[in-house]
Length: 193
DNA sequence: TGCCAGGCCCTCTTTAGGGCCTT
Image (cartoon, rainbow, N blue to C red; front, side):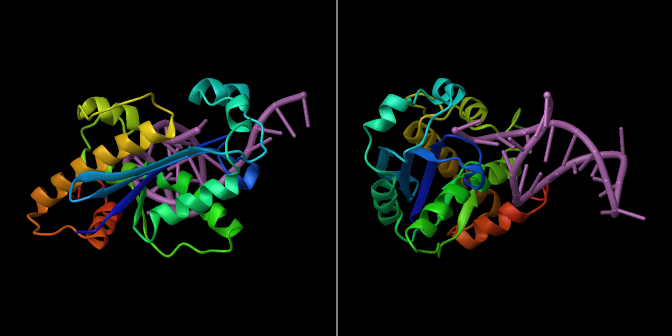
């Protein structure tokens, strides 16, 4: 069965196109409905974290000053994720930072990038909303640590992804659920699943 | 001075606008 790399960035803002920089990354590997490995690190991109973001994430300027350099951390993260399909909650956000990091290392992404938020809109349309925290409470998923820290959010997204894999496989009566099938479900109109 | 994202989705739509979601 396919191994998926579920990732989450904490950053200084919304987009690298406007100067935002990653401050922390976590990647959780999922295979056969189980978390099999984890990677997490703060990183120092010689950037400044606005007070609002310090308050939101708990990651301070003092913390990242002591962290390893961003290029080293992202090199390790890219190696850890290998060529596994990537998954993130609202992937359009994390994909920009991931692809920017690849560009800085003169690499290009080869694998697909799935979005757990788009999938959850199709699989759990009855949820109050599709924020990660709401889905964790609504589905009573395991949660360790605090929201808005990379490893906690990546693990919560991994548990959400596993739950959605089970739901899709049951609903569609599939022997095996491939990444390509997940992409098809993700692109369906809400209500069609 | 004030504003500055962007992909996706829905609807009072498609020659558009606004909400959701991520930090």
